[in-house]
Image 1 (spheres, rainbow, N blue to C red):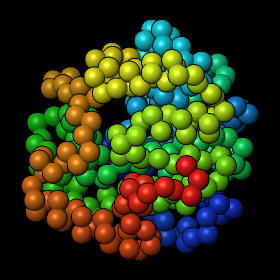
Image 2 (cartoon, rainbow, N blue to C red; image 1 turned 30 degrees about the vertical axis):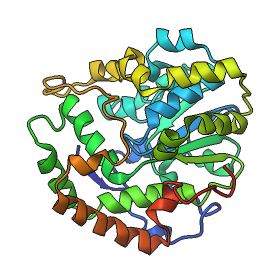
Image 3 (cartoon, one colour; image 1 turned 120 degrees about the vertical axis):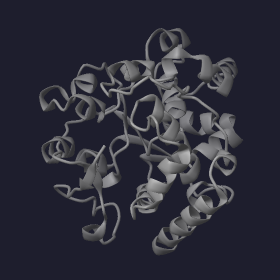
Image 4 (tube, one colour; image 1 turned 60 degrees about the vertical axis):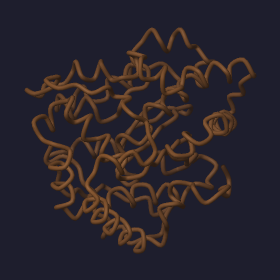
Length: 317
């Protein structure tokens, strides 16, 4: 999918003081009208948003959030595809390019709505910048995310016939991948102490899922009892998520119109490992990617461990 640099209608200058004019934002070509509609999107008072980059633990956190917002209705979760329970804001436009129906999935959703987006802060609805809606952000090691993106892209046809190493070399040939990962996360990391933002990482969820569940339930003011906690831990375990058809994006795959979609398939919930990239990428690829990442981290005055919450307890969560 070809992407170009885009300029939003306005920037969240009320939230973060930075040189927004030099913030490189990428989205699909010819999307100015769609992004304008997103910028002006009307929200409901009780909307909850989950924002991530792709393959950063989004589906995992989505399932947790939906269950908390719906009184731990496990039967309901197993009865309906996750994408229909908690729609992906950009999906319908990216697949069908139909502006008139782009927001149907969220408009038809009953409240409280849980809405997913991969857009960066500056391209999200400007109403979110007012701080009246709950936003959950999840980050993940860029290299683990990239490997996971590759296998997802193969299943959806975008990377069919291309090896992981070929895909990664092509990604490294651009100047954008490190900037996109780090700045997307860092902007929300800077907001982590705002009462309307919950910032966490895939790595934290792997390390202490029980703790993250407790923190998110408090953040949403959705208390759970001991029995519900144990049910959540089982439902959200890797083994259960991997075999659950409603959390493996089978509905989205059925909507895909790419000519190579489904010719080679990989489970959406595939390995779920931390640092799994180390035995899938070449050492020289890892070295080159890490050098790029370090450059962008230094420019933003933050470390990867900080963004991944690996430096011990955080200020708020």
